[in-house]
Image (cartoon, rainbow, N blue to C red; front, side, top):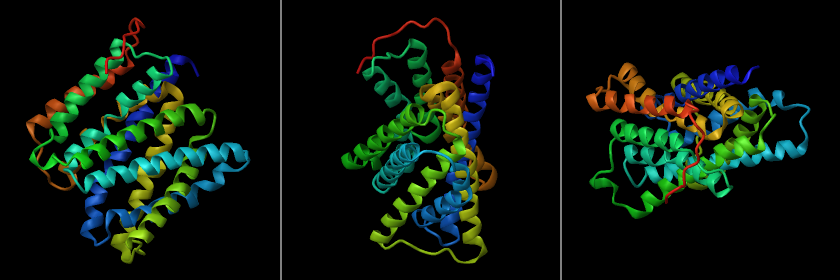
Length: 292
């Protein structure tokens, strides 16, 4: 595959990942409507995905399996921090903080000696401005310092997860990486739910339908697509393109949950898409100092 073709397929996979992950909001609301708390659904979501995908990890060394499991643990910690923040501050602010992850990716790369270009910084600026319009800026309910700190921690951990996927899973089939991420997540959230007393067995077709939806769209489709995108265009570019997720979430909510579509969402969506396009523009690779 030529570099240009790899870049195009990487962008497409990142968009597929964003679309798949965007279903989490709708499925999370449906989960509550059928009496299954969102956290209680997570162990079953990941256990089902791991069961289906583990056969694709045959023949890999134990060292590779350990790296896959470690990257999966970073994902679990980021997700756990996200839900802890969600319990203390608004959903919009939690989402906005989570999508600081691309900035953290660039920060980690800068610390490793790879300074971001002005184009990359501009892409993140467009993306964050658009996210502010789509999910809303912090309001009066977002003055909890611990909630804000944990939200930033979620973004920092998610940035590590993205960069770890690029650094440690190079050459590993995306389905195998997803299998071990899902296995680790099933064990992690199963233990967390057991400790908190939220470990429940889904009952009835509606609850199992939500679990199947969670296993299929944001897991079996979105996660391998994200790994494939990172392998082709790198964690920094993939994270910016994947930041279009909140835009698709709002559009899906409008389509399936009849939630109103604000003018600010359309403007914010345009900014997010502009950031995603800018992230793919090579331009002149002039390094810019990272100002913190």
